[in-house]
Image (tube, rainbow, N blue to C red; front, top):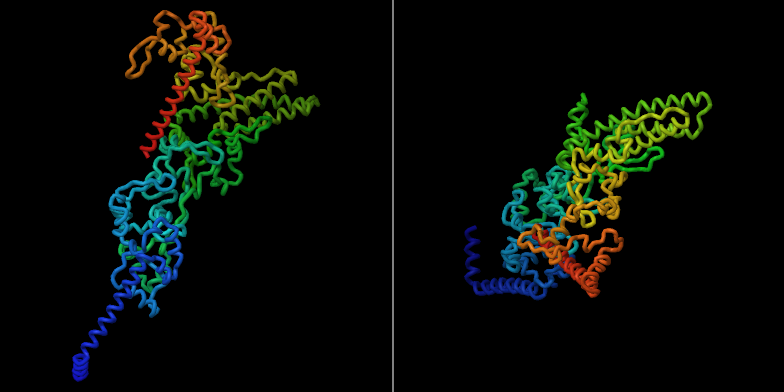
Length: 620
């Protein structure tokens, strides 16, 4: 063996010039080869497509925002890279799984460090903070720019793949939840939206403390798991650390920048499952239970009465929205506890005092059923006697059948599920019982509950004794006081509002005038508060000095200009007064004043709306 090395050394000494020259030529050729490929990648990036068997990557690059950036600007090629790639290609010692690496410093050469401190809006008002993702560990993983901006989408080179976001935010969290919570991306929803034909304002529910997942039951599909056979595509029989996510993420994500979706199955995010109006949880086991309650809630199925769905049903509130969800089967039903939980559901969505309103509904509906029930039985006895004697007409029999059906519908369907509809049914029952008694020449049943006998008792009995209406509202530029008209004057709610539709106003301004513009002396300031403040110069506003109108300072009163008996438009009738006291030209002056003020009001309104939009945008 020693002789071999001696001979080898002799050959090297003899031909060292040739060997050194050959080595220099080979090394130089490799360097030139590497430089040529590097140069072409800089000045002619299309040459990369010659070798890339995944030419789709190059095509995406051509159509991306980075199409003007050469490959080497992002891909930090080390010396000898192209020689190494060529050798692997010639020997067949290469992997079919391309894993292009982009160093963060390559991105920051163009985009700068400042981008890491920016908060941006992504797609539909998704708030994104680079600081929370790059400058710190995200779920104990060190991310790179290419962790999110990668090559796994078909749209563009280095575009953000939403599924990478979903994988981090939804893997391993409970159904309907997100890490670290929905508002972290979506913020507090402020828009009024339409869903399934219904208008929905998120702000009301957010203010009441309703969490997102109470309506958005499931927002993610898939669990993002990693299959063992995925590992074996790259690592033959190397699965010792399969259950060590910290080690795997360190090696794959942090050190080698492998994209998440190379290993993980995707997670889809969206409205996978919204809460339904009537969920099938109960009926999946109890096929025949709660049918009357559901029909009462839907406001359908009564005799001789038009459908009237509950407002809660129209808002798509499911059974579980008010009834607490049960885990397992209760061995003993605790009614008191059940009622308490339902009351808490009222407060959670509607606010304080609505728990008392539910109790009030239950009490009064039970009272109504107890009053109407005996009268249905009594008239039923009359119907039986008339039928036995042959004096019962088919029409009367049909009327009683409708009355009995509607009463049982309220009783079995629990009218509290839809009090408006339930009262309609009981009033219809009352009317039918009275008609039948009259036709059979019997004394009609006497009903005492004001809910059945008067138009306005419904509002105060069921609701507004608990939740008071606003003390005053604006109506036709008039400051209308509920307190004065209801509590002091004693007007019923239905004098101004429809008994059929909640809050719908039926009264007109002229009807108000018929009462207020009578011969008796009534102070104009009672209703026209703002107009009086302007006229007297006593507007309660910051920075405004009291200064009455010149007409007011001259002692001109309201009725000196406003003729209460003149039914023409105010501008026309007042213009006549101006001409009477001043001269005919003042008619035009009044119209000019009016038009100028309307223009100024419009401009002010537009400016306010613009300012409001700016403030709301800055809050996002």
